[in-house]
Length: 146
Image (cartoon, rainbow, N blue to C red; front, top):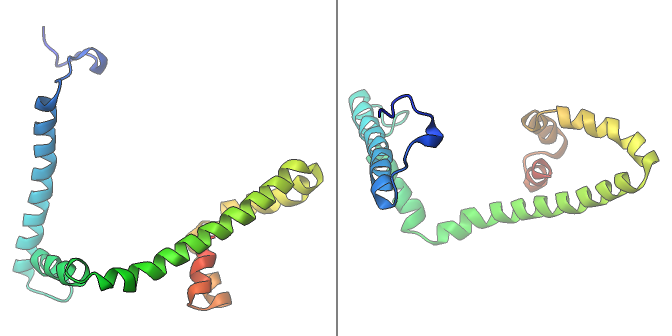
């Protein structure tokens, strides 16, 4: 019996680790091939500013993030604070407005067209408006998250 044309549901599955190791090996080999191609192409191009080699990127990653734990606090902490502040504000405002809309048909009639209009606007297009209104600072970044 040939399984070439059989339905996927009727094919026998490779059980256990024996089926997972070749799949993992294939995935890793594709990743390694991409890294090798990146290194070879950027070495041939020889433009370190526009096309850095994989080894240069890996070395910079090591020195900036892994070898220096203070970089985590210096760079990651402010971003996480902005993210959590925006998320918290969005939860409070969203639950309050959602409860109001859910409890009052009149409020739903007033607010629903505005909400539907705002849902149709892609969030990246609001970036320019927020930069003009709020400037480039934490308030603009939190407003984009909300």
